[in-house]
Length: 244
Image 1 (cartoon, rainbow, N blue to C red):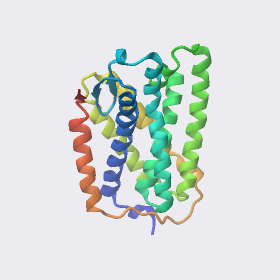
Image 2: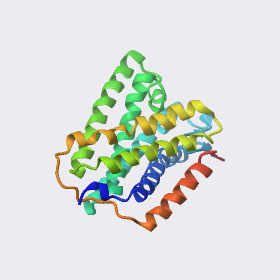
Image 3: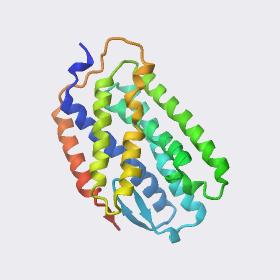
């Protein structure tokens, strides 16, 4: 048996669910949850961003809200790792890997491009200090996240990983087309977070020794149904954004 026998449609469905859930963990649970806990007034939640009344929180609380998205992803990665240790499945590995890669990518992207969550967190610090630091830390953390994910799964799964990567990127970008804030948000949030933030899926096999593949993705009608529902909700409901 080899990875070519993994079911194409089921892998797509898994990727849709995992990518959609991961982004809502970042925007909704992370930013949104922190805002509510700190007493802020939420204004808008979409598949690509969370907005709130900045006058409803202090400057320090605003920084915590900005940082909370990545923190939520790291916590989700920890939960995914526990679940994967209990039962090795491709979906659980993908969830863990993406929740590790994306926040590391945010650090790197904020340092290099001066956009994203961490710009607000570091707004009172000299750019000459925090930007190079975050760029280097983000690059190092991303590399370690990809290597850890590769060694966690321990077998070459480039085909389902590539399918997941392309599926997730298209899901974010298509959803972004419906965002009321325009194409810039698509470029910054959708394309950067998906195609950029999870690009490690395209080269993680470099850290895996060639060996027989055992983690095959079999056809699952439950996953196909979950993927269809997740796509409709992520694109049709959260794409145009919910306003409060």
